Image (tube, rainbow, N blue to C red; front, side, top):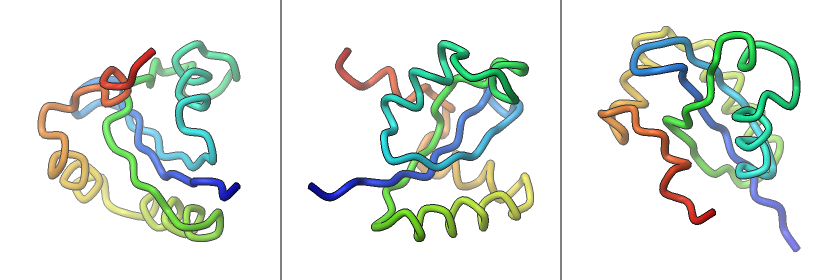
Length: 97
């Protein structure tokens, strides 16, 4: 079975602190962020809202995209988020429990 890789952006709130990550299991990784399973940046700053994600064809593609997004200006990141999620809704709330 082929794995699916995602690049994702979390935010503390609208126009708040953002975090960019990559994972092969988006739902599990979000659960870890929301429950502060791993101490670090997202736990310290309360960054739990999934505001953007995209699927990548491979781990290498996902890592390359993550690194590129991290180099972007903040204004570009905000524009990317607001293009598909203008209200900065937590997209994970749309998933079935």
